[in-house]
Length: 200
Image (tube, rainbow, N blue to C red; front, side):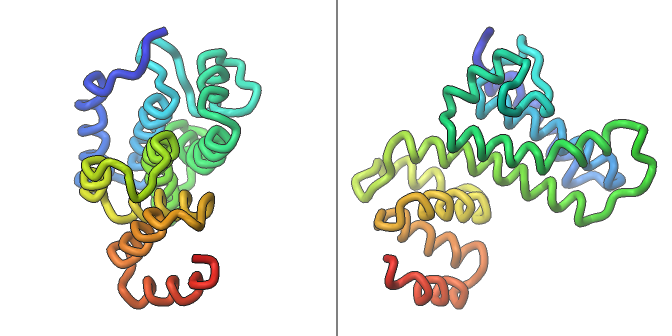
């Protein structure tokens, strides 16, 4: 089994982003595209290449897909549980949008819920990365600088998760506060600081 190769999926991800964000298609069409996008993201997170079959429904505990099962174990209990929870938010609507058994229309809220879960998949990549390098005030500034180019919501989701795991990490607190400002506004950041001051 080969590992995930980013270059194989560049065109596909570009097409999926275009089709689900910039082309006027039905919510059903968007959900179908978002499901494919999620599948690529899961491949990336689990480091499973294109030579191995992978379906979102196989991302679960005690999966029959041995590649998925082994890579979930490599991810660790906490992150694998989070990945499974995110996939469980995507898969039912993604499947319904792809198959013909579901004949009713899909709402904007349905699409937004799946889009939010895909953002959680992106955040999970960075959660794993920053956990592995044990982010601190001594962390390489280049990694943090590059991360700052991502959409604010992904930065917020990443820092918020890491903060919940280590509320005494001053670098995480600093980055989370900045991401709250960028994602929401200064007032929300001030309120968060005030509500969290005893813990911080």
